[in-house]
Length: 564
Image 1: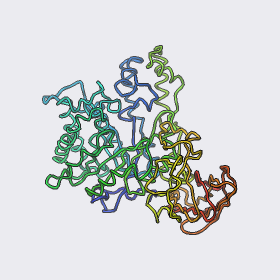
Image 2 (image 1 turned 60 degrees about the vertical axis):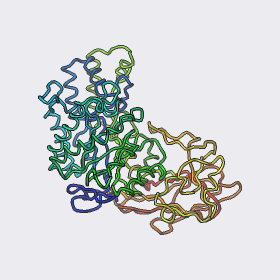
Image 3 (image 1 turned 45 degrees about the horizontal axis):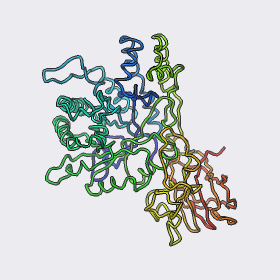
């Protein structure tokens, strides 16, 4: 249940079979948000092209434009300001209970000096920024996951790990491997007594498939890192990601051998982007959880439309999977809660990266300092609809095809014996196939559903899906009453169509098991039907059940609105 106060954030967390427990022994589901582009600036969050797609390229551009002294001032201010206490306070107020902090090793390492062991020392002033963040999170009751997003040398060989040569040198150069183990040993020693730190995410998205010849090295590195951590810290959870963008868990099979257990406090992480929000899409992770009796975690997912959020994150909730949304803040975006306003003249920097004219130092300084000012939480455009979709907290729109994921008899029921007949022929959408419910494209032209909407764009007209309901069919949509507005009055609207020519249908609406109204649909054209009064919605979980009691209906979405 997503309520306020974060009372569940209490003490060191630990794996207990397939679930996570907090320090009080209570079952805990992590519901978090990533602090992307803070300690590892990502070019796409700056709306930069490939020439500025990673920290080292952005740093080089800024230094070329304004000189090293001013560039150093820029970055000191950037790291101090990008995520401030006001951001953390807002995350807690929205009901999140955790954050994931992506760390670039280069941010921490002092590359101007080499120790006797051949490794770089660490910058204390940079570590103190993480200390401060942990202090804020403790104050506002948000667990902290430390995520090595960019390991020494790079674990992916792409922009996301700040790779220098577009190859995963972590697995190719011995000193990078040693530095990674040493870095985790240092972090574990520094934070071993911090209960607000939930765990250590050892490597973000190691080794895409084109570097799969190195996959066999991941588990040995994980083991060596864990050994270094356990020498100084026996309490914090270890979080492991699979290879190929954290989607391939085949490397974990050896980690659960009975004769050589990897660790007794593990959380396994996968990532989910731009794919079907259905049981089929996460089946392999559910199977692994059952087989090895271990908790699982969707550690990154987002960069999509709010409708997708309403489905994908309900899927995770219904399967009791902890999750972390990517990401909290970026430039000129509708897909994150916090959108930094694009500074005037920003396009000059983009053009320069593309090979265009070099802005003067004065012009570049003005643009960059405007960016620094705009990134303050108070100066950002806040998008509450993003969080409402993640949490299913009204006002919110829920596509009809995102009914609950707890299976037949709980989340839906089918009265007829010909389940799935609507799937044959042109109506097959390859989505939620195991439910055998009738899901179609609105115009019945496409054959495979698409969920790739990386800029938050609406579906094209021929991409919309709808749910077909015959007499006796029912579907349940869970949502959360807002703890910040315990006297909210809601109404429900629906986009419906009579499914058969010259026929009609009737939709019955129930709230928490009580019938509260019905809608008679006569029109063969898509229309919005509304006016169903849900009354005052108390904080906490609620169940809206929709049943076809006459005829046959097609439904595109339902909208839970505040009463005017």
